[in-house]
Length: 115
Length: 111
Image 1 (tube, rainbow over the protein chains, first blue to last red):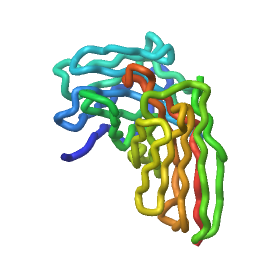
Image 2 (image 1 turned 180 degrees about the horizontal axis):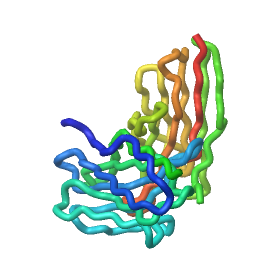
Image 3 (image 1 turned 90 degrees about the vertical axis):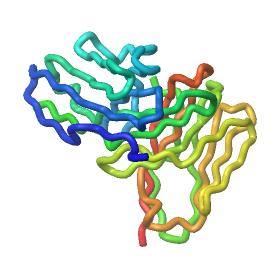
């Protein structure tokens, strides 16, 4: 069990640029979650996948954000036309999702800074 | 919208002291998880509580889920510098699919 991995760990971009983050979940986990965390706050739910299907999306996920999990394994989160307010830690988590309790395991996160 | 309020928000104590962190909500959760997060890293799962009134112990950490499954507490006995970090509670909604995180408690244990 290698845990959840995320790439890159840090990303600095200029306002208006597009960025893409990758998450590799624990291999036998069929659920994958994306969260955003700003300094001093708890993580905020963005979206989650059951296998390749995106089942829930938060209102926080504006039309500039898109997430995919094409083969039900790794996932990508893309932010188009980045804004300074997008600066945050983007966290990915995975879980088995078979029966309660649904325990999530987090990756190390991608720290995004928009200048 | 934060459905879970944690208190205190910040806590600085001496090594060896005891402390309690609270996680409160007006909503009922199907389960509740506690995490510890270090700067620049993702949260690490400590425990999951499912049944109202449930108490779980993890070495010096004691977790309790309220009878009505709306609140929880984390008690640390004889705190050590290695306990320093951000403690987060997260409640699972009725479907168990979406999780709502608390505001976090930043703990510093001074040697």
